[in-house]
Image: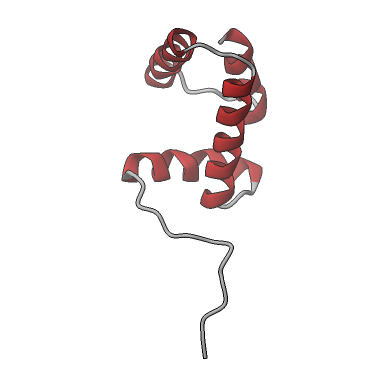
Length: 87
């Protein structure tokens, strides 16, 4: 009896990324995997829109600074959208 093909695959991710995904997923009632899929979709959209590497690096650096200096009480989707617009 052969195993049927699965639509899922296991991957190793940094613990910090999984922790960030868990925190971001909670208010949206998503699973950790669902949150990471959401972020991957945003990444594909950003690439398809022509976002340059330097623009992406600037956006990541800005996000790192914001994550380190603020604790947002706003809706997480609004914050993500605002960060994406800034990029």
